[in-house]
Amino acid sequence: MTKIDKTDLRWLLISLTVLVAGAAWIWMSAVPAGTSTAGRIPAPRQSFLAPDFTLETADGQTFTMSELRGKPVLINLWTSWCPPCKAEMPALQRAYQRYQSEDLVILGINATNQDSQVAALNFAAENGLSFPILMDTAGEVSAIYQLRSLPTSYFVDHEGIIQEVVVGGPMSEALIRINVEKLLE
Image 1 (cartoon, rainbow, N blue to C red):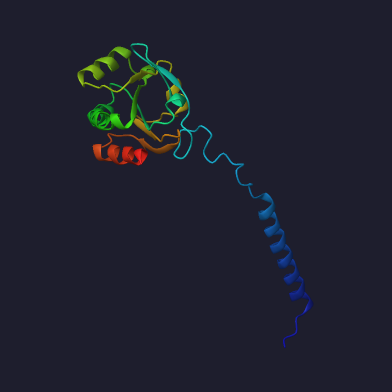
Image 2: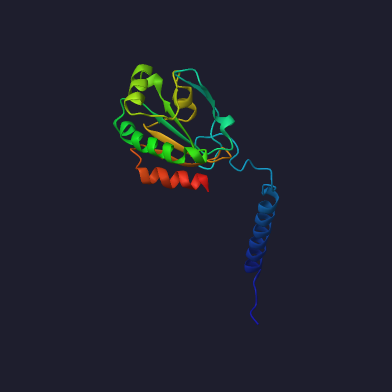
């Protein structure tokens, strides 16, 4: 049997005290089940609730994000002068045509504060876009979605939770299809 000196015994007691105190702190500071937000607060990030907004189309039709709960939504922020925005619009239109019958909503939100409504509407008409084109004239949606690059797309599930964020573009048709089909599962 080995003999333990006073210094070793003191360090053993200090180590055990720290270990027990640390375990107690972890146990006491744990978040009780059901008390966290679990992503249910609005933030323009994956796994968070899509921030709410209300915008109109040029013909006065109003869309409110929170009223679209129950449906998968693809939000695409764009401008008519942005080359990657222009390049991905045909793929977005094909996705809309393919999945509209499965309740997919595509909202093309024109950052009109950086563009012009006339240019946006001309672009939509020239390209045969049939999904709603909303006008963010004051830049409010661009601000709450923290728009940093054009285009930016948000794939939002039927509960209003952002499942994927794609910054930049153009998005390929395959990427759009994969993310939409995840929303439809």
